[in-house]
Length: 101
Image 1 (cartoon, one colour):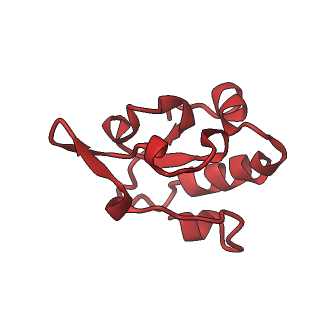
Image 2 (tube, rainbow, N blue to C red):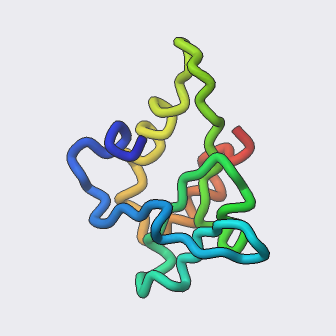
């Protein structure tokens, strides 16, 4: 999905399942282990349990169920286009993007 949102690879690093670890038997994304400024890290996921440690850095996505009219990636691309002007991603995500989608 990230390749569709960021075809020119503005995101310097992409982290996947092998970058997660288990907490209470569940795989979680913990940005405290990344040695990166948390203000610049975005977590995209469909499962809130996977980012419960840093929900302020997360954007909850609707799971894709094969619908031809699904527009989630287009909405995300529009949102992320304006992201790069913000120093702290969490400011924009908390006020602009509807996390409840």
